[in-house]
Length: 426
Image: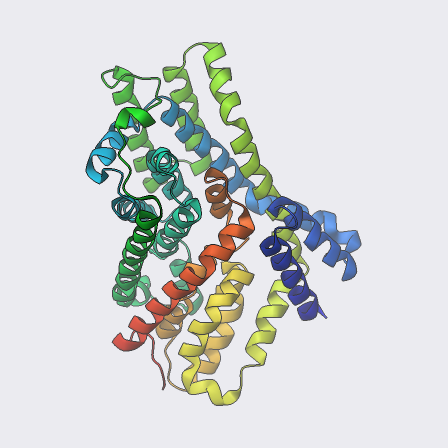
């Protein structure tokens, strides 16, 4: 019953998003609520959703204040010197712009956090995209390729979960995956070149001057420019070292940036009011997602779906279990949370694989293959930030990106099989 209910819920949810009949906020709230009622969970919906809200709240607060911080810094002109150099370097050429986008995104993605990638990259490049008229769905797709790979760094989350679940050393999981991950990096640059050629054919090479896209309130020689960069660097170091809770650090940084750049009360109110709609949009989607997460997990639908999929795998597939796990990880990490997949589903798959001599480390590596698609999941909070900043429809973003992200998964899988990182047969 729970399996049928969960599958029906996902089908309904995906249909409503892809068809564009409702916004993501509406689908995230109403679809799981209706199916929870159908499943007879009515009396417990409230506590389930509250658990979901508690799960998402720290991320929600983090993104609200992180958006506030980077928007303040953009208004203050902190990124103007970077934009000037980018404009001089790329000369309005879509190919160079997209390659530059991916290069910066991969660099920022080294911190393992997608939200940071979106805020820093879009703060620098978004004025250029809009000035030239480049395709924003393609921008979103490229950034998602980068964060899907950055998320696989040892401190990003999934790799640590896979290693912990399989009780193996992190190095045994991550180090052999470096070559497949580098192949995915090349895939990202190849996609940037391909999209750039398409955009160059569509809009040509546009001549732009850096002054056309500047709008900062701070002069290039103003001391506050140096203060803003010093504050941002200090914030990034503190985030990596986790000196304080991430959300609290962005709270402090936002307050300092607002006070230093706009010391007058009316100025502060003005800049907060300008960005309030975008921030509210992200906050609404995040907390709407808590309904979906709470009901999916607390009703047992996610676990039931994972167990049923494991149960229907034929015994004859045993020698191919690493490959099977890699293929299953692509849709499953979109459907369920990483915790459900790595701690609920992977151990069961690993038990079956062990019979054929497939090691726990090999199964852990295989389970990571689906992460480029996982980043598109409605359970991933940072994706809502991306679509909001690019002013995209959530379903439109899914439709455009899903095939390219699936391609990234298969690039990773192909190289992993060729190098023996993931065994084809044992």
